[in-house]
Length: 263
Ligand code: SAH
Image 1 (cartoon, rainbow, N blue to C red):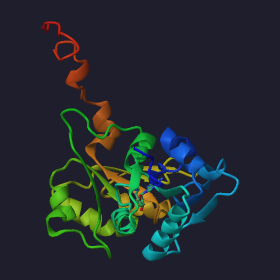
Image 2 (image 1 turned 180 degrees about the horizontal axis):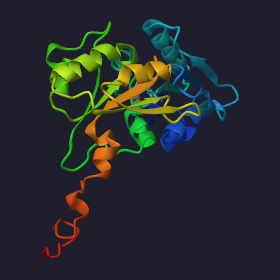
Image 3 (image 1 turned 135 degrees about the vertical axis):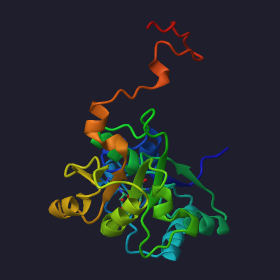
Image 4 (image 1 turned 90 degrees about the horizontal axis):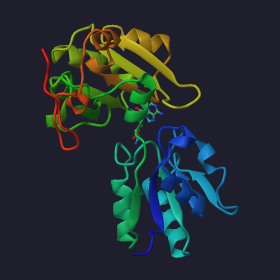
C-alpha cells in the first residue's frame, strides 16, 4: 500500500517531545503543514523541509482548509494536518476527512497524546484506581455546542468515575451544579491543568466546592483540562491501600502463579 498523502497528526499536548516518532517524521517530510491552533507548539516545525509551507488554520473555514490540502495533493505534495492532543477527541476531523474523500483523497490518522492523559500525568495521578474507579469519561460541558440528550453531564456525573472535561473552562459554575446534583459533594477532588506539558503549565488541585474560586484566582479561562475524580484526592489516596490484582502476590494470572495468602 502506498503511503497516504494527507496525514492527520496528533501533535500531543504541547511539549514537542510528546509527539509520536511517526508524527514527527511525517511533519518533517511534509510540503504543506496546516496546524489547528495555539495549543499546537510551533517548535514542532523547526526541522521541516526548506520549502515547506507552514500555516495556522485558525482563521480559515472548512472549505478553505480542504481546498488548500486538495491542491497540494493534486501536485503530488505531502500534507501534514496537525491537531492538538489526539485528533480523535474534539478534533473536528470527520468533516475534513469526508470532504477530502469527496475529492478522492484518503487521509490517514496518526494518534497523539490527548491532553486528558497529559493532564493526568502532570497531576501525577492514575485515572483508574483499583476499587475506587475503573472508568474514565472524556466529555465536555454543554455550552454553545449542544450535547446529545443521553449524554447530559448530570447523567454522566452520576457514575462518579473519573471525568475529564474538555472545552469547559468557562462553564464551571454549571459543571459544579450538575456534579453536586448528581450526588458528588463539595469536598470531592478536582484537578485543573492549564496548558499541560507547556512551560507555563499550572496544576491546580482543588475541590468541587472551591473549583470556581480557584480557577478565578489562577486566571484560568481557557486551555484547561478539568479532571473531576476521587483518584485526584491526595488524602484519600494516601490513607488507603488501593492496589491492583496485577501485582498482588496472591493473585494468579496469565504471567504469574500467585502464592498462597498467609494470615
Ligand atoms: N484533541 C485535543 C482536544 C482538542 S479540544 C486533545 O486530545 O487534547 C481543545 C480542548 O482540549 C481545550 O479547550 C482544553 O480543554 C483541552 N486541551 C488541549 N490541550 C491542552 C493542554 N495542553 N492542557 C490542557 N488542556 C488542553
